[in-house]
Length: 99
Ligand code: SF4
Ligand code: SF4
Image 1: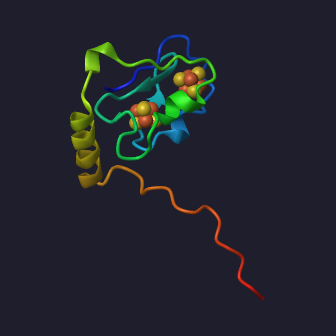
Image 2: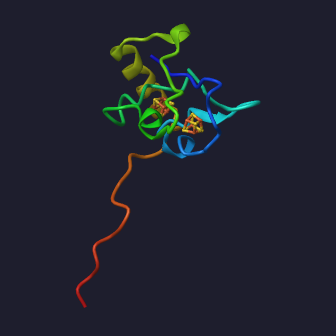
């Protein structure tokens, strides 16, 4: 299922950089989710990252875009094939070299 952002969004900006599919962008009045890019984080994470970070819990499932896990997985693979998804997160910090 794709998720959606409701008008309760306070435009706090924290969800947008967390989305592994670049599905979140600023809309006219508040943030929005592109249902063609939202995999509910399937393929990247166990839980929807935007929901995890949203302070006002305004990201429910979009009833207009209900999809099962397999469909979400296929969407994830399509996005990967199109090369439009960021590489999976790796270690942010390299271990210090012994000097
Ligand atoms: S559920 Fe995941 S893929 Fe969908 S908008 Fe939120 S962070 Fe992006
Ligand atoms: S985290 Fe929630 S409140 Fe903040 S911009 Fe995203 S949807 Fe809006």
